[in-house]
Image (cartoon, rainbow, N blue to C red; front, side, top):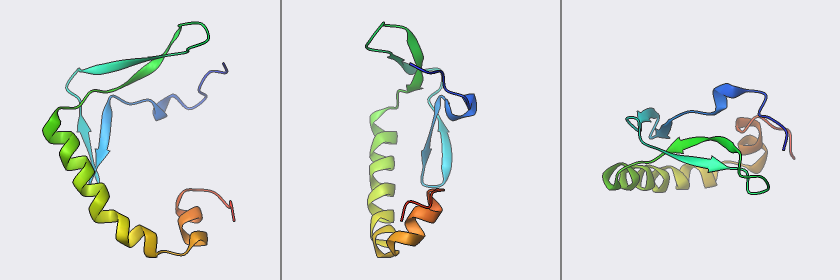
Length: 81
């Protein structure tokens, strides 16, 4: 498996409702299933934070869905369409 070139993409925080929320040292190790090597860690969030993330995603969904596909693609950094 190729190594991630941009290590800044690995973070122990979660982006919720426009803000980075720290997992406060808690994390879940992500391993390569082919060889068991450690790929990185992802935040392990408590129930309240997970519920906040779900609520924020639900609130943003209607606005996101109303945007044309080309605009959504551009916002995601790609010229996919």
